[in-house]
Length: 371
Image 1: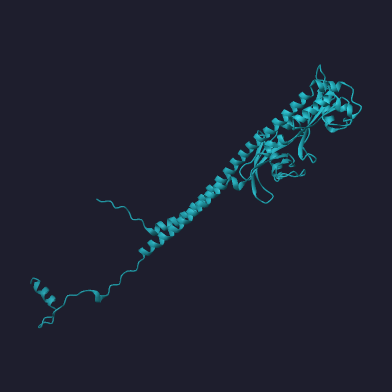
Image 2 (image 1 turned 90 degrees about the horizontal axis):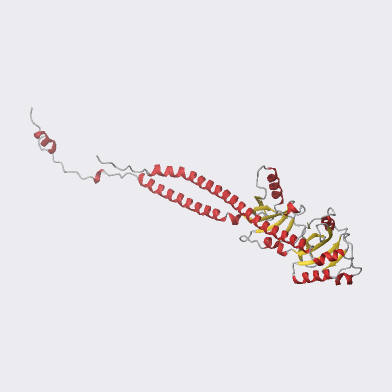
């Protein structure tokens, strides 16, 4: 027995396709939205990792300068200047061996902007450039460095913009210990050019919109290559504050990196990854964070482009199905052919002369057997 493959009814096929197309479209849209959300989260974590690496570079530079200043306070010329009597005028201050040593150091290293040394009482005993003898004991940085008055501690100030030099500068001060132990005998302060410190932040470029910003936990900007405005605020301050609050209240959460989305000043959505600097553990006044931001359109652009291509394929598919359904419907519903009687060929009929019956009828009667 031969088995015939069943014919597919074009009407049924079209109905099923028309019913399934909206489901297909909804499924494709759902998959694209899930992919976009997953990609946004993945890139957010990536930006957090980049922010951590950048923050590590900033931390390493500051700690290196802290070590440099601490070792500078232990040099023989500085210790002798602290133990000796303070100079009574600017000429004697500039002419002592410690001042000459500091001036030579500044002239051969452009990172050093200014170096001064005071004794235990705060009187200026050495300086890298001409200065009048004065008392520094009233300065906040000096008080913070002297601390308990016994050993003292290293102190690092916030960055500030030097309008005269046109650069950001940072001040690091350290105790000058005596020759036999660590008892404080004076204070050395170095003013650094912060451009090398900020190089990891300023030099970061991701795509055409990605950049890094050094911010405080209150949202104020420490440094951004986009602006030198001292009162500038990070564009995602609210989201940053909320993220830090959630992070601090979450038990067992990762404490150094977060990511979120926020709208820029022009309404453009950005993905932002944030990492905390470790400097605040040693210097509580430096509550710095590195925020790396990049436009969302640049990150999820490939997925959106794929979505448009899928939409185009879907529309072409819809048009093709409709065209096929229309074609087969026209074939199945073709009108029947009306055949006229006059178009049918008939044989001629002869009548019998005696009976009047048709010849065919007579022949048929004759052919019947008699009973």
